[in-house]
Length: 228
Image (spheres, rainbow, N blue to C red):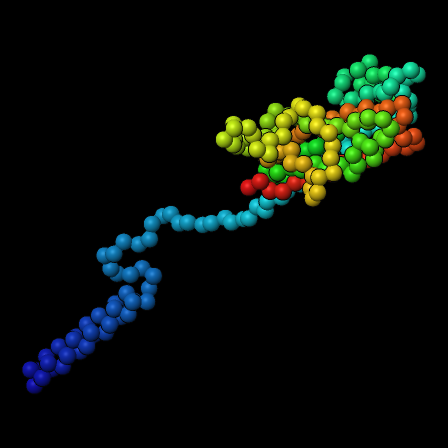
């Protein structure tokens, strides 16, 4: 009879140990704190910040008017020369007298690349010298210079004769023309950098004594395309 009681007691102890083992195994499978020897994740992680910056091609005439006012060729002179690149009333107008011959109204046009990409720049006028001024041997010319150093540049690719193809020289006077399309390419790259993104367009007129009279006007169009 004593032997049977011992067997029952051992059986109860065995069942209790089994339940404890089952509980420990269940806890290790469901808890975040696993009872294993593996390392957990490190103490650093990675995030990202994304945005897109759009390219914008924008040019603007910050000085967009040249106004010589009213005037005439000096008596006895064949013509008068008006030149916005000159720096005084004595040099801006020769052999003539115009009311706006000195000051901001007769400085050159100022063109700026206010976008965020380099541009290929073209200039076109609406009239030539004969249509604009008329008379005997008129002149209508423009001169492009950097208002900030390195604003306008050229791709100086050479031919077999070592002469530049499609090269527009800065600081030189050219007769305006009625070139088809966008006009004359004056900059292969018109810089967008804030320290070098401004050019100046000066105008020279030779007005003969036999010129057209009244209000004379022409428009200059600047057109830009991305230069890559």
